[in-house]
Image (cartoon, rainbow, N blue to C red):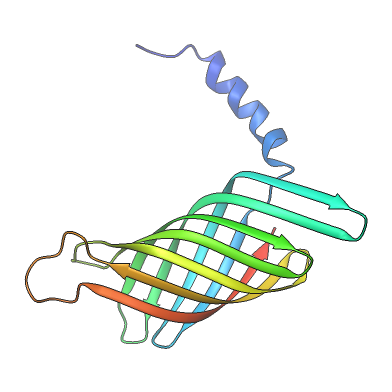
Length: 153
């Protein structure tokens, strides 16, 4: 069954207006043996202000790449929730990582840091990835700490 042509055209015409109030997030993360770049688009975003207090909640999904210092690069799939309240930045997410030629890793990520501008934050990141479908004696988990710079556009 084919959709009538006017339905996708209406959705495409309304998308810029719906996304105009929401912000894309880009993070650059440096870990002890790797560097990651992540790009997250919002599912939804809420902003609240009352007097001097200001809060932003962001729910999104995205893609990323982690480049290991030894030359390998892994693709990352992300789902995350971030909140900024009066300079405190927190984030909780789920990361799926697919190394080249290997089975995927999956696990949680936590970020806590300082939002020094409404669109910029520096945070400490901790993640614990495990390979739920791994076989044999190979590496089955990856845990790491890192420093993340997050920018909202």
